[in-house]
Image (cartoon, rainbow, N blue to C red):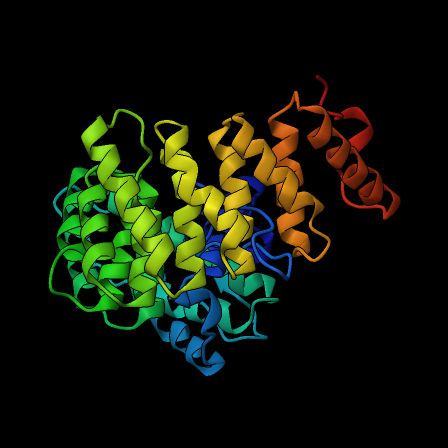
Length: 380
């Protein structure tokens, strides 16, 4: 008897739901999210094509003929508004086989079709769960079967649709295997399409691969494709363990991106990363300049967040944050980020503390959020 995806056990449902989220938001979170980074109040970190392009709901019916039980042959149904179910005990990617038997060839088509259906019906819980179940199943297969992993990497290099590339990259990014990292590095730095290279960078971002640094910096120095550049910024790994010369190379590239990239999101991401990569307070000069002078509100908001991330308590940092907080015509998101940054940099000098207190009082009077201003006054 078929078991509806919605009736999976708690553990299965949690895993499925978590993996289904990859198809809703992709790698949007990255490793360093700047909250409240645009004038609308929405987070402005990278959003993959898979999350915004949508899909043709009619394509979902393709799953009905492609997702089958390896043992029973019964098909599941994935059309929007239908009963999204898998046969009892079915796993389209992982099967119990006899010792002398071969596993069936890997076919990622069911996963891609289910992911497409989940994008077409974002409010359909069963469609989201089915995509998660199939993603979880594919992860299990790739972890257990080196041949299947090779096939998945080969299929990644053959795909061209940005949505499908993002869907498969979301799964491969969970496989911490040197083969996956090597293949992603080769694809990201090679002669593939921009969409293929972008997907490879998403994998490297998920793996937080130190070797991705040079590939990402090369892309930022030489490529113009917007999505590729955004993905490269996200793939830059954390700075821990990096030598002075390598750190200087990263910060120089980030400064150039901040100054020259016309894409607001790329510039915002670059200024946030400068807060993470700064070696001393002098590296924050471009961040302070952006906070005071960049015409783009999202970049100014990112600069305020970067100063919070940097944790520098120099007088110049406190002065610029207080100035942003007290500018009456400043974007509300910039002021909010500046206030939060000052909260993290206490104790504050008198002028900055008064500005912080005035904003906190106004914020509390308006019933803003969960931040308890009364318990968080920066003290001297």
